[in-house]
Image (cartoon, rainbow, N blue to C red; front, top):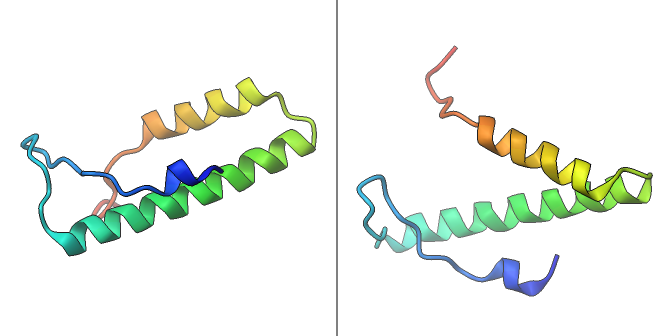
Length: 74
């Protein structure tokens, strides 16, 4: 993972406005860095054990596209 993935982002709310709360942005940026790190490690492992790079990326994209809000759901 390169250092450009650790930059801070401006986050957008569901009304398409920039989230201005510093604490909210801090949490979102920390979560993004954590997810980036886990994905990079998983990607590196997959390649080292012989997985095709494009196949791995396609599966991660499919996973991302299938995400749904889950809090409060059983």
